[in-house]
Image 1 (cartoon, rainbow, N blue to C red):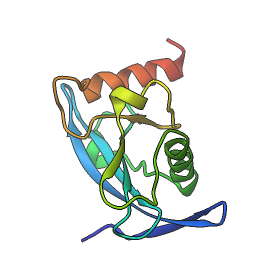
Image 2: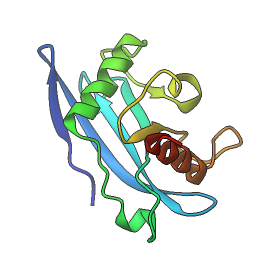
Image 3: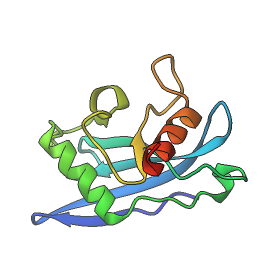
Image 4: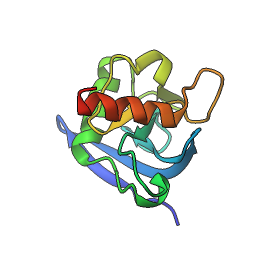
Length: 141
């Protein structure tokens, strides 16, 4: 079943977005990942893509099964605003503008989520370690 297309209006402009949940295996657990895609000028326009890691945790049960994190309209509005300020031109035809962990992760933050690479690569950090660090930071330790 495909994720529904949703609409958001920013400064008189309509953006269409979709968020799809997937699992990111880590060294100690599986974690909820969410791929958000946004179009700002029709289906052939340059899309925006961002992969988010939920930092909910730790849990006694499988995080993929119990985590119910999902980006809100306010979260998507923040993603779009940041992308527009950092070079996304939705009116261009074709292609994808990616908010990557390596290029934008240190400058962009979203409560409850971290920017991550979509697929575990040599550059990507272990999702379990990322969630643990975020949890410890929230706990003040």
